[in-house]
Length: 391
Image (cartoon, rainbow, N blue to C red; front, side, top):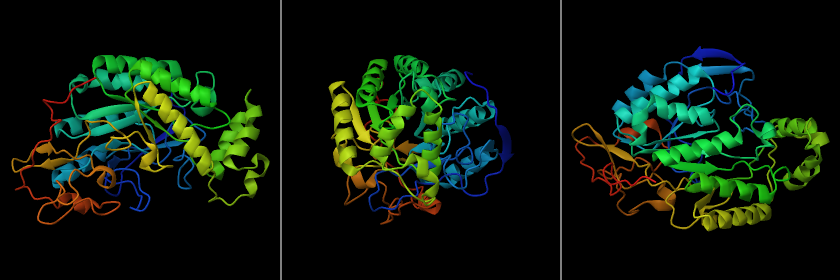
């Protein structure tokens, strides 16, 4: 592993359910329904990205990695109780492949479990060696049709010491993408969050071109939003670096006064203006599409600003909703759980049985995943295991 974990590790039992949805209500929602799995307590990550939203939650704990030790039996029980499952997203509040052996082991065990039940999943990481370790530990993933990995390249090689000091270096991440795509693995490139004023448009567009050259097929970007804690961490990192002169530009774009951060309410959010976001994402979308990629904005603009004809902001064609048939086996249907953007048949949803629509709640509840009866025999989607074409 490229970096050693210096933080204290504490194992705890997860008390509630493992599977859960994004917490966003339907109004202005952009994220599709997802089966989230939190491997750790929020922000438990050695990458130490100053702008991390999870580390900035009031309930996050500094200098301690709280890892949930009972996930596998709880997750398998919930899978067995469910009759319909949206695509899984492994660890949205910390990097599932960060260089901590205890965390990677749990991630590998979760992946093995999802493969066992033939379910869709994705992982987002800034760890090049973690991504390669995953493939080495579970080589059947090369031919497994229902997963992809997203690798974040949020800065240049030189500037990464600010944005993700504990993560794999940018060059190694790009090399990992090339190795993964050459092996047949689907890879998404993420550039978010871009810290405007610190990163220039030319640098971000350059990263998109490098991601395209490495083999990524889709880009997700954002300018991010920050609270007092995350913005303070970012400013502090910059003040003690060769890029301290970028602080005035960040102040301009995000509407802050760096020397007065302690005077803002703790719930204050800092974002770029709507007009800035529209201009920024138009340039990134154009750059991505000129490079043969599709593009989507993460959360901060509606879907009309994304590339056309993508079913979700994730855009990958191999993450499906899976329904349990009368044989007890999960099968994919031609649905990606983005009910708002791309329901295949909004009048007669493929997931509805006896008038019950499991994903009508935003967020859905775990009990909603039990509504589809085992007697239902799903029609396999066209992009099934035999038909899915790898890059």
